[in-house]
Structures are given as C-alpha cells and as structure tokens.
Image (cartoon, rainbow, N blue to C red; front, side, top):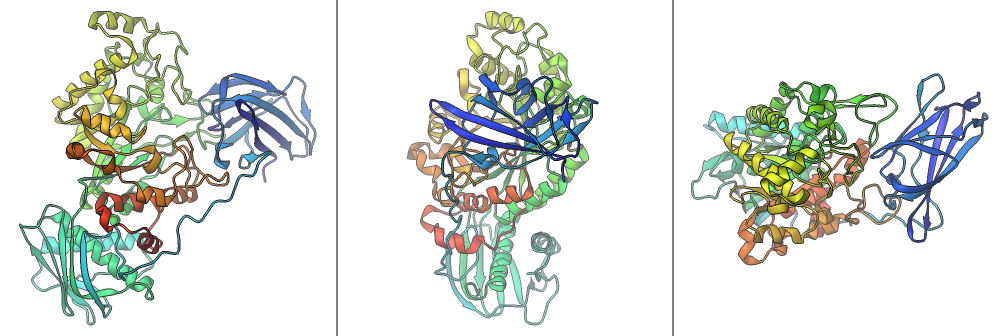
Length: 636
C-alpha cells in the first residue's frame, strides 16, 4: 500500500472549462513536509489560470509540478487540498484525470503515490451502454469480414482440414503459416488444419486460377473436399483464414454456427488499403505485442500496419548514425531531457526498437501479407528528436516562442537549419534499408500556427524564397523531403496538413484525412490520393460512449461501435472522385491507453468493424450479424 494517495475531482464553472480539485492524503506514520507534487494528466492547466493552495512551478505538456504553501506539514492521516481554475480543455471522461503521480521529498527521494480516476462533482455522469447487442445470424457461418457472395448449405463438422494429395510444398508452407497464426491467436483451441490426412477430416484442394482478381479467392465445398481457388498468394491466405474462421465458429458456438458441406464463397476486398495505425511513442509496446497486433490484423484481413515510431513523447526507432535519438529521445523521466508523460510513473521509462527488432516485425508481417508503413512525424511533433540533437534547432530562436496543440514549446524541426536535411537523409537511408514499403509516412500534422516566426534563420529563408508564414515554410520543407524520398525510391505519405501552404507534388503522394471527413473530398479534389481515417469514426482512442465512466479521449466526440461499423467513408466522395480513394484506416493513439485492459476496451470491437468496412460492400454489411460473430474474435 502506498504511503500517499492523490485524488482529483472536476466541477463545472460557467464560462470556463471548469475547476480541478486535488487532494493529497498522507497515509504514512510520519508528518509530510518540504515536498513537491508532480503528476501527469491530459487535463492540462492553461496559460492563464488561478491556483488556490499551491503554486505551479513547472509544466511541460501533460506534466505538472506543484509546490505546497511554505511551511505546510501534513500530519499522519491528514491531507492537503488545492484547486486550479483555468484549464486547457474540459474533461469528459474519468480517464482525463491523473495518469501518474509522485512526490519529491526534501532529501531528494522520489516516491510514487497512489491515485484514482477523475471524480465528477455536481452532475450525473451517466451509465455506459452495452457496446454490442446480443446479435443475430440468418446464415450460420462465422466469417469476418463478411464475404462478397455466399451460397452455402451446412452439414457435418469435419475434425480438421488437410491438404489434398500432391499439394505443392509452397502451398503446404502457406497452410502451415495460417495454422501457426491460428495457434497463436487461439492457443487453447483445437487446430483447424493438419498437414497430413486425418480420418474424419476433409481435404483442401488448391487451384491457381488466373481469371480470379488479385487478392480474391473462391471456396467450393462438397462432402469430400474443399476447393480453394486464387490467383495469388494473398488470395490463397485469405481463403485459408476464412476456412479457419468457419471451423472456429462452428466449434465455439454450435448453437449458432455450422460448417458448410455444399456451396460456394466468392470473395475479394472492397478497398486496396485496409490499414491500422499504432502509436508506439506515447506508449511503448514490446515486440511481442506488436507482432500479436499484426496477427490480429491478418485474421481480420487488414493489409497495412502503419507504425507511428516517433513523436514529441519519444523516438522509438534505432538509427545507427544518431544513437542519441534512442539514448536520449526514447528516455522519459524526472531527470531526463523528456518529462514524464501519460502513464509514466516516478521512475524513468524507456523503450525502443532495434533494427533487428524491426527486421523481425517486418518479416513477420510480410509472411502474413501485411505491409509495414513506417512513420517518423516531422516537422512538428519532434520534441524527442530536438532533445536528442540540439543542433537541429535555430539557437537564435527564442525559447517558448510557440507551443503545439499538446503544449510542447518549439517542437518543430526548423526548415532553415541545413543540418535538418543532413539528419533526415541519414534517417531515410536507414529506413529504406529496413522497410520495403513503397511509402514513408512523414507526418506533417499539427505544426503550431506561429512555428518558426521568431526564428532568424527562417526569416532569412522566407525572404529568399518569397514565403509567407508557417504553412508555406512547411510546404517548402516537405517538398525537399519528398525529393529526398524519391531519390531513395520511396513515395511520400502524410496526414492531411501536408496539403497546407501549397502542399507537395500530387503525383504519387498519399494523404490521410483525419481531422474531419469532408477533408477527404477536398484532398481528392486537389489531386491527392486519399486514405480516409476520420477521428470521428476511425480513431480508436475516442471513448465509445458519452458517459463519464467510459475511458478514452473526446476531442472528436464519442464513437460507439455501431457508429464505427455504419460509417461509410466512400459515401463522402462524389462518384467522379472515388478513384482517388485508396481505402480506409483505423488509428490507435496510445496517450489514452494506460493498460492492456484499456487497449482491448477501446480497440475492440471497433477494429474488426473497420476491417469489415474495408472489405465488405455496403449492401452485404449487417450489424446484428457482426455483433454475433465478433465476440469470438481475438484481442491483444
């Protein structure tokens, strides 16, 4: 049990984002004096605030440090309470409160303290509704995403499926890969496949059929065999995953689901780009967790893993030319260059991926026909890189001359510092050797409106290049970045703000519309290829209900699974522009995820819902059927 405990509550104040009340309890047998209190919270104190009973001595983004009144001593069993009025945003959910907390004692020791959820004063927070209805199935087959067409008759459940005689070795290997995938996702369940014939099983006969579309497959069922036809290895894998799903559902819920004895399935993806993004900067995920998430993507027939490797909070990718990036830029702690953030405790935290880790993850994804799209977020969201390599900054630019939306000061790489391009060139060289993806995602989002305005070097650059303001400076920077990537055989992907200030060459550039759905139309009209990933539907860190008790963020509102499932990104685009839409993508931002339990609560069932939207035509979608099946699907 902790010797000290911090409680936080919020109360509304008319005309403002409300008031925080914080209470520190001394549960130890000794008086507490001569200390400071530090905590992290997404409910940040604003630039203009009023604090009663304490003094705010330091703040960096979500990190806050308070000093008690001089001479304060908290007796054993006593408490100290203070209030802050003047918040950057109004909290909406219980997880908007304290994420981590510590005391610094008068002898310099740091002590972690307990804390609870943010309490709500003065009004009812509501009750979270169930995320899923009971569900209903009209056709007794467990398939997600639901296929393009299906005409089946159920029959006896085979013991197992196995390759027919004279199956080629490469096909047996493909079968073994899907078998291994299933065993990783459902280690306690009977295997769906055997590599040898088994009495009571059913043979799979594999046919290569050039007339079938890329990534598509067909299944023909009879009492004696299953014929899987495809034109390529990806289609073959999707067909095998469908067979594994059919067997899994028929075994797991025999009252609802069966296995086909006769009939056909003809299937192909609706969208080329079926993605899922993971932010590993705000929260570090071990290699095993990243690989399991890729397994889950493959099970749901998603084919893009967008790996958000850097941000203000940390730089997670080993770059051998600049070891400081992970020696300094992946370390967060009270004595480090980067302050604790999100759920960091009193001790320093670290974590990065070595290049050997990256090779393992990329190879694992490749076996499962999942492409790894790497992202380094530039020019904004670069506090970690700047902390590691101070020469990236214009040293004449005044500290704190601008702040990002997340509260970081001077966090953007400077377009007028030539070392910026030397640095990024070496980073791109190493990334090109690690990631076979045709694209490198360079972020391009949320550069503060006043960024670089006080930089003497940027003033010279703006005059020389006839640039007006931050947006045009960013466009100048990103055009150079696009050229650098092109020389390395890579194309540029980015968030929708890449289009600001004139943007970059549209040919081959891929932008992701995240701020609002209408941006997809604007980007397509402007000539860009588009992936739709609006926060209002596809950001999986958003709370799933309005209730105070529900975890998650709130800037894009709340998104119940049914709304995520029903959202039609394609409907946002006029018919003439639909050729510019490459597909859709889920985004998992980790700042609001404090544990595996919260990850699973926020990500599922919405990730499989997005997978079905990416694969299944609108006319074939059915929320009640989806709800009945998705309960059996794996989580992290």
